[in-house]
Length: 103
Image (tube, rainbow, N blue to C red):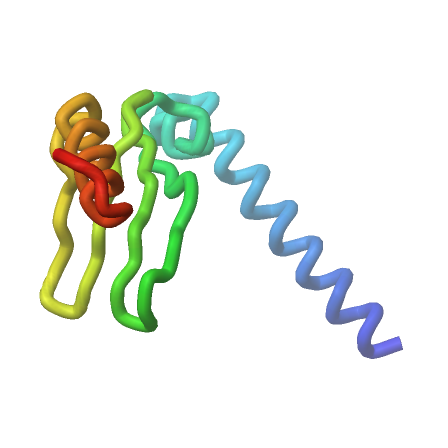
C-alpha cells in the first residue's frame, strides 16, 4: 500500500499544479503561449538526416524554416554547404573527377 499512496500523492500534486496553471492562464497572470508546445511552429529547426563519415566527422541535413541545409561537423567546428544549385554543380563535378571523367 505505501507505493499506491506515493503514486496517489504525486498525481494529486501534478493535478494541483495543472489547476494552478489553468487558473493563472485564465486570469491573465501568465501567457497562454507558455503552456503551448513550440514544436509546431515554422521557426523550428529539424535534423532530417545525419551521416557519420568518421567517428568525428558528420554530415547533417537540417531543415530550418522550410529550407534544407547541409552542415558538416568536425572537431574544430562546423561548415555550412553553399547554396543548393552551386553545391549540386560542385558535387557533380567532384563525382565526375573521382570517376576519372572530364570536368
